[in-house]
Length: 232
Image (cartoon, rainbow, N blue to C red; front, side, top):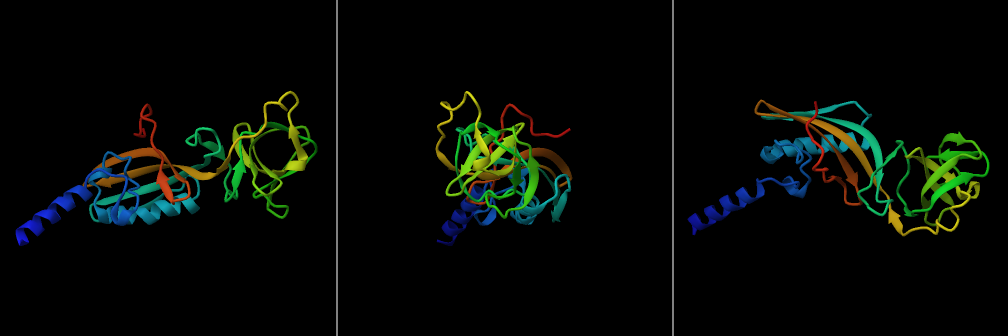
């Protein structure tokens, strides 16, 4: 019986230590996109975990955060923010300015609007939310979402999500009235670019990717197989 129990334990260990995006304790392996990821010990995955989360949630763009334990060490460098799940394909990621309040559901696919007057661009969908800038009347904005239950549009300019304007200050662009009936309600997903360096037993890998919080914590987004993940 002891031999059977030992064999079962070895088999279980082999199954749980193979290539996976899930690390120890059911947590994501944030080095899964690296060629070294499948060999990263559980203790190293645990060391990387809080550093990666800190970089995604609070890190300054371009400023690396380092970690290390045993035979492994690395650096996580946070990049630009993005917003997912507001387009028909939820994997479409829109570049976004930092500091936006995205904890809402949105009516989507509202399209091009024009501002009827000067409009305060705010960080959140509220009259007392921080003012980011003032947009001039007549400017064109792409309404990527209308906040459910609040009279504010989340708008993009030049393909980049910039903030919120009050819906009373924007109207559908001439000629698009019949096209912009509005799409389904979606919950926004906060995403962020990153790059990483990982050294394991003297072997070093560098790669880049995107992570998103779609309501269940930060997870690595599937990588485009046509794009290399090795940084020059």
